[in-house]
Length: 317
Ligand code: 0X9
Ligand code: ZN
Image (cartoon, rainbow, N blue to C red; front, top):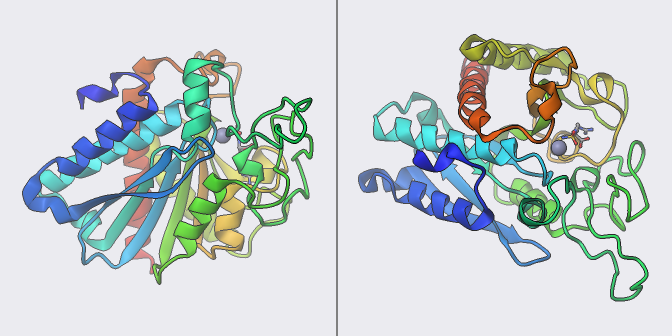
């Protein structure tokens, strides 16, 4: 879509989703658009479902947990556009098996702040008791340290001024709770949860809170390999695979650990999009400020990687 040549503002994302939902009226029941909750600043957390209404299995994808990782929401929007394009072309094989739920921007308050005030903002925009203690001017909770599974055990801070502030208690934030409520609610069975971040080119699985591996890590590793190999075939982009704590660092309170440990979802991945963090890579210096010209290639290769991963789920259950 012509919309995806730049990093959209929140309101533009909402318009984009409405437009996608309106595409192809006869196939209207292939999509639904709804909010899973709202933020401190009262923005809705929009979610789109794409799939045949009779599809039995469910996949959850989110983007934009961290405000400054602009390539993440753009990649979710790219995948939404492609998936609905496939519906309109009658290519619905994946979507007759899976309903894919995509939350393109889980942290809209932080994202808007990064768009307008401070490009490197990471957290949400929680006031952290500012009105009770106006001396504490530090705003924001790191949503990826706030999820209540082995909360605060590693790699997180109790200081509201820290970039990795885990919140006053576990699951304190409206964005965290909206996602948790959505995962737990209804009798829906989730096959997989994918959460897109940047950067570094990692396709990682739990655990993040400690160095040991989940019992089924071999299956997690195998499916990550399938996804990343499909992704690599598009532009040659290389991803590293492993557990979060081993490949990156130990840190508790991530949405991935919660989805597996509490949400009981088997295939859980955090995907750290481009650029690579290898300083020998020509694009590494862009870090979180990946130029808008990357929206297309990153979207395309990631979409192919995700489809490859999803296809491998069909044959293996
Ligand atoms: O530190 C994070 O939250 C993620 N990296 S980022 O640069 N996007 O901030 C990695 C999270 C990996 N998962 C867990 N630690 N549970
Ligand atoms: Zn992140």
